[in-house]
Image (cartoon, rainbow, N blue to C red; front, side, top):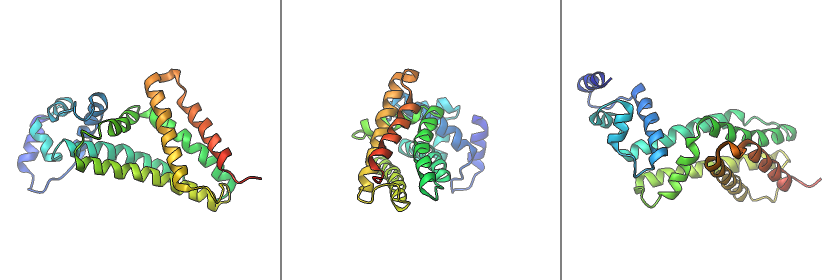
Length: 214
């Protein structure tokens, strides 16, 4: 693999062209960032995990910050696609089912990739150690997540399910913070903490609190 990378790097034009090796590097970096944190993950460590030279890394990513941005963008991008496909409710009954299903989906995505929760915690806990460029990117990703929840709440209001006087931004913040708290407990305690059941119960409680009174 190393010799192929060197050969391609020597023959490539000046503009960097990304390919499948990007994903190999991102996957390796994701595991390392989740295991050792941002400060504890070096480019040399990523190179060893991916089976390439350190010099080959710079052909694909400029520095460790760009690696971290790519890792989080990959994870959150995959999540956004899943949620976009499930946002199809056209009436009150469908919205109620979709709302609960969204929490089930969050549990399933965490179970599929248990490093997601740790990556999110790393962003929060190591924010004072992360450079401003990376931190700005992470904050934007965080705001996108909250915005998607706000859009969900606003759609529920338009469909006549959620109360009109409910503050969508505050509701979105509650959804996001409750998810992170439950995901953290699941990450710490493993299968002894039922993430799916806990998130589903939280969804039903939110629905009960925020629904229009009958």
